[in-house]
Length: 68
Image 1 (cartoon, rainbow, N blue to C red):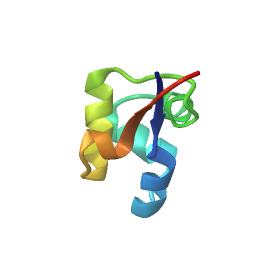
Image 2: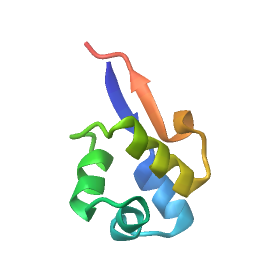
Image 3: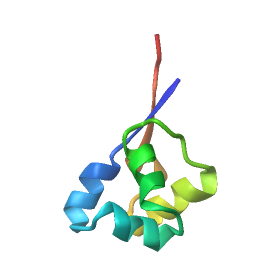
């Protein structure tokens, strides 16, 4: 399984930067960058915090995809 996300799209909708999101959830901008580029899977708590910032259910921000 591969975890994908819509963080970049959701940030554009809310017009916030990676730094803004990072500050809102208490992590570094680099952490947001690695999550956004699917290089890092966030903890459950962090995923929930990110979803809350966007006012969206977790499943609308993070998706599981079948891998090869």
